[in-house]
Image (cartoon, rainbow, N blue to C red; front, side):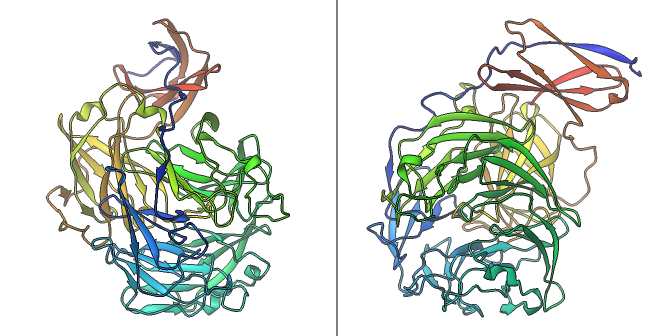
Length: 567
């Protein structure tokens, strides 16, 4: 049936305050590591590969790196024999092997080297890469996965203290090739420092500079490469400002005034929106993508000028210790509890497969030598309800595949999401991205999921989550996308479909209606729904302004009924 001009949906809302942040959001104990985790990445198997200083927390990665197990809490301090100082490198996963490329480093004088190392995700050995070194020395460069399995690297400082202005591409078949047609001279104006770099849904590389306002697009497909300016950034941003891709073609960047900006990099000219304010400047912050698509902001400092006159954000008195959670759906920023230690320059933040947030490091230099970490439990882990479970899923798929997963209760699954593991360092994580995947409930325990296309679901390691009506995520299933079989497994094709989906996938809501200060204790809430929303899904958000809690409910307009699906 068709609806009239409008009708009333009456919903009983039983949660008065919804999930909130408690004082115990940060786990009590600060845990020890062998190094300051300036660089960190979740690798196949679920452990975290990290490095950055020596075993005393001093500048110079030297011969040391650490492997930390989030499940057991144990870490293993290891030494390598490459003689490469891996302080302030860049790291990206090699999809052809599942190992990690560590590119560049420090020559001892705060200038770059051409070295390329390989971290073996299975044996944990760190060794010289057999395909050799880069064409240009780099210290503080940025790297990112490409849709065809290659790795792109840009920026950094060379062995003479000058900017490395010519980018390079690494191929697992042939090693390194330079892109002289994409020479970016703007990097010379102190923009060499970890340029903000992302791959958009058209397969183009977008580079956003921090010191000036220019935005560039690089095309690497013609051999020599091409670069063109495609826009400008409408604000100033510190070289230590944070950025992350939180959805398809959507990048969040923090400015110098506490502003939170979103840029759409999917079109020929990027569009910018200042969507929120996080109260104060927060340089050196870590950005972590939660399984539900929100972004956790941890660590950092509110001062860009240090007491000694420096500009790297090591003023402990200005440390920002509370976590903030930004919700891209509403652009609300909620303030959470404080962690114990200041996480300043050379700190890092990561989402873990179990849904906790890792916040570690800080120092070299700095007032603290943080060879340690803390763990934040987002509010979805405070809910007493049983977490949903992924019982079985493919260990590897290709981008665009249709695949099945087995779960404990398919009818309880409201979202299926995927988060790419990337290398975190210096408030950057160019490879990380979050996706909301289409799915169909097939049986009480089986769900059919559609992976995104290769330009969107880039090759690498992904964390697959199911999320229930209370917003509680499953522990992530680690899955390789368009990459080598994960260690200790072969490519499992038993759950991968050979046919296209046989039904319309579950879609994201097409409209959002927000109700502030919603009533509690089972009272009704009236929401007007328009006639043209027939067969649509409408997301209702109930906001308690005193606590900031948000309870969501997705209402699907069917032909003969209205069925509430809590998200």
